[in-house]
Length: 120
Image 1 (cartoon, rainbow, N blue to C red):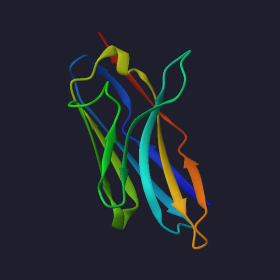
Image 2: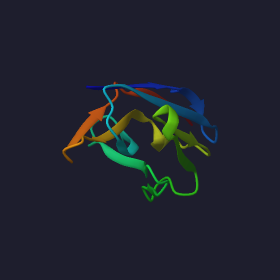
Image 3: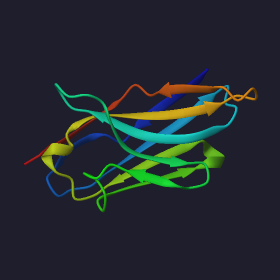
Image 4: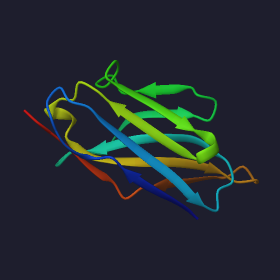
């Protein structure tokens, strides 16, 4: 089992910045993709950004140019730098990791979520 622990959420004014962190621990084989998802009240969970072990990134259109995802493979950690925050970025942000076992099977793990609130 893999545990994901997030930190860095909070309350910020519109235009401000926050940095989220997520560290994976436990029985890790090889985490290929790590990412951040978010879920606002009454809405479905959506991908914010993800990053492969090799550093390839993918962003939701709504955050391109404002958010930057990065990772530290040695620490099994992923980060999300969020700049120019908008009220519509308000949501619970979840860390996600896909761990590939030695058999090639993929296990999907989620963090507990961290609240990000952007006031107007």
